[in-house]
Image 1: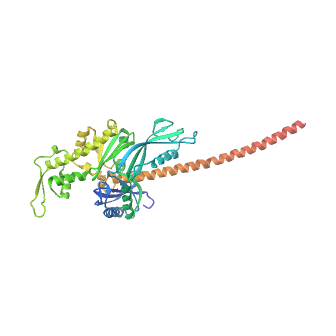
Image 2: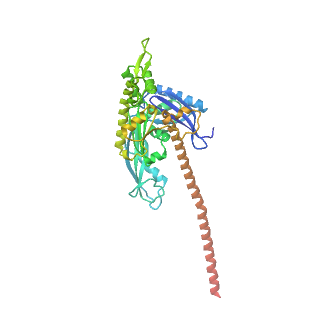
Length: 435
């Protein structure tokens, strides 16, 4: 196992902190070696508010995952979310000095790096710069400019920013836990790697990741991310509504939601009653499942309506042939798929993170609630592959350069021979003229 590539994903969520250790098997599928999780008490709506509690939960999750996998974890890929996340499209361009030479990967990377230096609102920081469409010498609609000839290289970029304080708090928690961050990744992007297929991204699809504190939106079209957003409502607000509406404890509200709740109240039987223990020797309380489902449906309709508004605002509503994919812990709510289809008029499915999973001794990782953590591991492997590709390309350039040197030497050698032969021929001609 020492020479194998192993990646760890750390999902710092509102309800749970989850660490997953994975490696690629011989078929290129992800094999989960270990998983650890802890209750998240220091995170509210995706933002770290209590450093000590968050560090304690991170250490617990990492320790469990490391013990299960039989490794010491030192580096992790971390997800970031929260209502402070902002996204927008920005146009950028560079002018190349080498007019005759082809556009190289270095040119594309220089253009991308230039976007990281753009001015953003105070207190914000760019975390992702993702190219959408390129333009070479004012010819647009180009997906891959490398190899083309041109002077002016431009592109539209999807820029995602996060609050600097939120990033600093995550960094502080990771460092205090004795870890290092390999990559900081927006959580809906990570989830998309786990639950969306390439065909869906090509056809057009909207991912709705319903977490505990937030609901994350990511819209893809032509295999490119076109829009992203964060809605400051998640599964916890539904639990809070149940707690207040039915006057029960938070733990009881969560159990009622997950075990008996339905997103469509009409699906609940009006005669179905659930009895829960009373508080401090009080009589048991009887809860109508119909009333419970009415509370759930009211709040979920609000969340879906806000998500649908994001889809309409993106301008891609009529181009999403792949429809909607809902994932995250909140997606497991009974009848939610039907409610989303009814309210949006779009085909909908539940996103399970088994698209890239191989056989694993931990079957629970196939639940939608672990989509982000699985996606963080996949994102780590993608980064490793990209680095390897760049290394190989650099080596090929060096090999090519080395291969050209003997050719230059050969030309010099033959030039010298020709010069010498030319001298001999002239001497011979002079001798012939003497006779």
